[in-house]
Length: 127
Image (cartoon, rainbow, N blue to C red):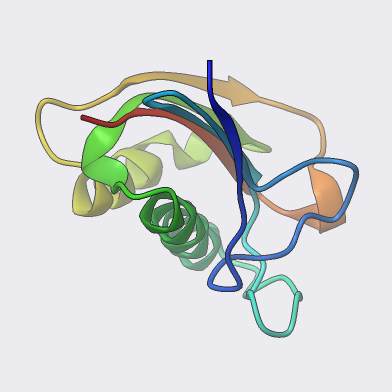
């Protein structure tokens, strides 16, 4: 087993005791991304769509740093503070993920770090 820590300035720095991602052999475990601007480390916007786009951009940046892309995603776990945004989530995810789509869970939670409306983590499988 080969374990590599993935770190990129193109995505927000970790705001706790965790890595942006960990690569074990050909599998990449991407930590939950919230809609932080990677430069200012502040939350982008207060609308779900704006925040969701930023989350996918952050995930894509970490995937790229690991040598892959969101096309390599096999599992996403989505945390939202309002499942009323489920349709918007599907639309936005369709802009960043291609068929065959990864497996996914969508869970409503009472709160997310920094007051975010959405957080997504991912598992990638690289060839």
